[in-house]
Length: 315
Ligand SMILES: [Zn+2]
Image 1 (cartoon, rainbow, N blue to C red):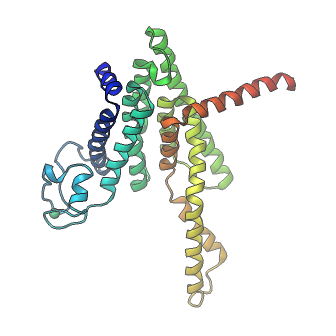
Image 2: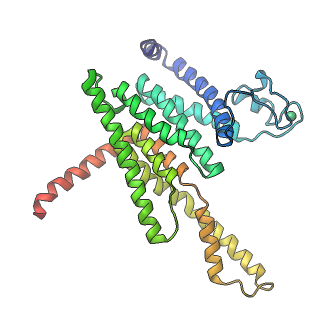
Image 3: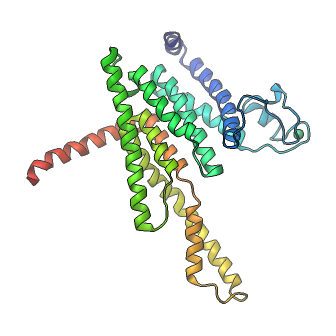
């Protein structure tokens, strides 16, 4: 089947990319169901999609991206608003699938679609519920090692029998261990320094999953890239949060003279503690997988070479 896909891709690249985009939109529609139902322990298969009023949604009103736009975000039964997030997740999945198809050989792109689906589900569930379900993190980890064994080309190896399969599985396992170990110790250190939990157990397992698909370099990049993205995105949020609190404090000053600087600091910290780290990790993991991998791998290799050449000088 992959040969057929490769053939179609080489002969009709635009057609293939459009088909992958449509496939991605359909998968995105299913991911919406997963994001909504999995944290509530509901089946993702039955029942079919329904409106908030309980009426079933007809298939022709459930076409990814298109239906939402045609109906302008409202249901046909009771004119209830549907969240803009549904078409956004569908469009995001479709675009990422098409982009993965564009930058990777068909086999890596196909595995990538599974990896991207796990990242998208985990991100939105973490945003909604501040958890990453084990079936995505631990399940994804096991799946990543298994897929690495079956398809060594995921890690850029030539498929050549058992040796390359074992090598590929070892790359995945070292990715799991380095990724989860790194986040675990950063979390422990962070808790000692900042006296509040910075990252949860969910993040430890989640970076392990990223390592299984991307190797240890991808896991390291997800951690530090995620922290960087987090601080770029979070800094404005924290500043806005503090300004809001300061204004609130100013308006309350006349009513409550006991409102001290310390309590404002506490509120600001509590505000900042409410931010899930999973989405930042996922964005960095996405950037790594979709084209930043060569640059990161080269950088990490040069850094380790430099370290190795410097070691004899110290002795
Ligand atoms: Zn309705």
